[in-house]
Length: 628
Image 1 (cartoon, helix red, strand yellow):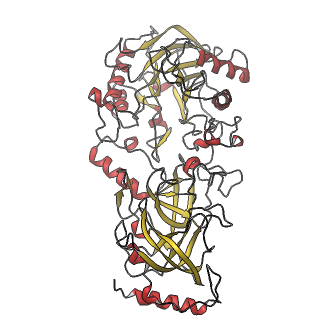
Image 2 (tube, rainbow, N blue to C red):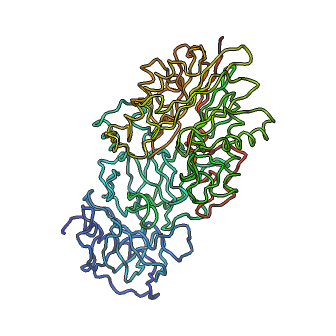
């Protein structure tokens, strides 16, 4: 292809060669023969404007300056992709990349460094969607400098990867040295341990669509496209998974830094690669491979123990599958003894899990705690938890409502309380499909309700703990598919369950004689979704929305924060609510800090004396001044 900029590039390389103080090749020859530019193919002709190279499969000779050294077997073991990136001076066509990855294997014939001017002979190929040159020979012919091209997010457009997922379309920069001058925000660290990746987003923390918007198909589609264009994957520059040490975990300017969602980074620089996380695994997307070690700003510092106003505290806490039965792979859990076990895979993991949970509960210091994702056994999970907690805070400090097994799921909800603060009144009540067929207990866990009396003044409060059907699996078989409106799978199932809950509470199922009801737990619905709207239309106030606002959140999924855990107060209870605190100790933390020991994880990363990453959901704490 004839381009005016070809002349510029040739002149650039001639000047660089004349300025170089000698050269070296793979054979160590300092007397290089004159370069025949007629056989050199420009990198932009290799890349062209499409996703694939028009020269795929052909043998070419290219020249460029090394912008990123990711060779295997050299002195730098922190960046190993089996090759290096080279780049020409940018040409006039902004639609084509001026950089490319050169693959030279595990034992490269020559060790290159950033700034080297190199000539490469090799075959063009597409490797998992990235244009590469598999080198047959590499020679260093001089040196030079390439300035990073500044790229701003959001990208001009999105595209879909081979899995059908939306990603930012950054093809024009593939293989190039780029810099994001903006301040970008950490929006996900889920694969930090496994693939060494952090997802960065432009424009601050990203929220789930239905956290702030009513369900809508077109608007949700636009939201997801905008989300894709705003984010970039920051990779560790390694082709292996579960690397040690874990890059970025402590890459902050502050002492004792630990990365969290909501932290920020400005001016991050590297070469842009199109690949999956490590080898052929992970999300296929454009990934920044850093050439300058990133340094994060702790914009979202870890919160201190919560200060909650009010005479009584009620907390809602999803424990992320706390099982007293070790998960050794057998299907021995659940009321029937045939369900998969979850949670800890060994006694050591169980001790670690208990340690984190107890530390968090001790700091929450709540008079009543609604628990979600407990092993559904007679009382083993609750007894183990209470015994361990009381061993720390004092014998008899906590007790639990002994409801036995509830439904037939592997997990259930539960209720802890401080006998010195509140006492159960009468028996508990259970809502399942036998009480109301609208409540599908084959999908949602039955609701547990218990009336409690304040020891100080005799005021009564009925607490109902729920855990409705998740978005994670399909309900299409029951006529409740994902409608594409932002609510995910099973929205109608959750909505019907919410209607059943409010109608059930109107009947005063615990014979409390008091209209003060507090619904807590995990409805698996964001703030503006149908199930939460049904609660509100029935006269229940969403306390996090009222006290925290539309930016309330307790969980992160797909790089988006959202409120899945809720506290909903009846009209008579609402004036008695004094405070609401979302304690962000879990959702923002990388899961590498939890109790698990998979992938030969470094045990020393765990600290059971701090509450951070005790679960994957943040606890929600409500302050109350109850009146008789």
